Length: 416
Image 1: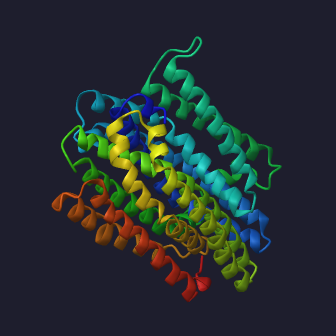
Image 2: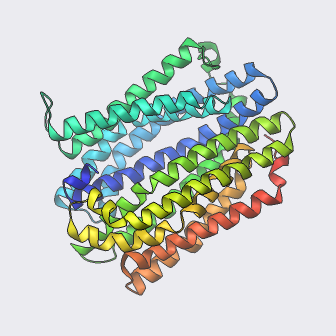
C-alpha cells in the first residue's frame, strides 16, 4: 500500500523484494517443518524433554542458516534487479531495498523456527502475539520513516524496508526472551543448543524435501514473475507487473489464514500420530479444510465484488487499476482451492510426509504454471489474464493433488 502511494516503479521494486523474502521463508522451512514434526511427535508421546531438545537444536540451525542467507541475498541483490530488466531508479530502489532487508534475515529465520517449535507443542498464541507486535512496529516505523514524520528522516521506499527490519529485530528479541524465561513450555538452554549432529540431521532429513518443495515453488513463481515482466513494453509492462504484485500481496488475506489453519492441522496431526490416534489425525485435516475453505469462499466473494476499490486503494496509477481489476476477479473464484491445497499439504508435512508435496510442486510449477503462462501470456499475447491461466492451472492442480494424497491415507504410516 505504501509503495503504491509513491509510484508503479516503487510497487514493482518492493514486489520483487517481497518475492526474495518469500524465498527466505521457503528455505527456512528446511528447519521449521522438521522441528515442528519432531517436536509435535515428542510432545504427543509425552516426552517433553525431547521436544525441548529438538527446539533448541532447530533454533541454533536457524541462526546459522539465517547468516548464510543474509550474505547471499546481499551479494545477489543486483542480479535480482537485472533479471527484471530494471534500470535507473527502479534498479537502484530494488538493490538498496534488498540489501537493507538482508540485515533482517537472521532475525526472521530465528523467529520463524522458534514459532514452529511453539506450534509443535500446541502453543499457538505465542507466535500470534509475537507477529502481532512485529506488525504494529512494522507499520509504525515504515510510515514514520517513509514520510519523515516528526524528527525522523524522510526515507521514501527505504523507510518501508527499514521499518520491516526494525520489526524483525523486535520480534526476535521478544520470542528469545520468552524462550529464555522458560515459562511457555519451551526453554533455551545453552547445553542443548550445541549441535548434536544426529539430532540436527533428523531435523534436516524431514525438512529437506519441504525446503526443496519451497525452493521449487519459489523458482516457478520467480520464472512466472519474469514472464509477467515481459508481457509488454513500458508503461504497460510495468503496469502489468505492479498489478500482479498487488494481486498476490492482497491475496495474503486468504493465504496467511490458510497457513495458520495449516499450522494448527500439522500440530494436531503430529501430536495425534505420536499418541497413536490415527482417526483423530485424519479428522483434523478434514476439519481444517472445511473451516478455512469456508473463509476462503467468503473472501473470494469480497475480492470479486470489491476488485475496483481494492486496486484504487493499492495504487494511484490509473493504468495499474485498469489492467488489474478484471484478472483479479478471476483469481477470486479460486480462493477455496488455494486454501484446500495449503491446509492439506501442511497436514501431510505435519505427519512427516514431505516428499509427495515436493512432487506436487514440481509438476505444478514446471508442467503447468510456467508453460501455460508463457504460452497464453507471451505467445498468444494474452496480457495479464493470459499469463494468469498458468497460475490458475497450478492452483487447481495443487488442490487436486493434495486431496488425492490426503484421502488415500498412506501418510499416517510415515516414520520420522
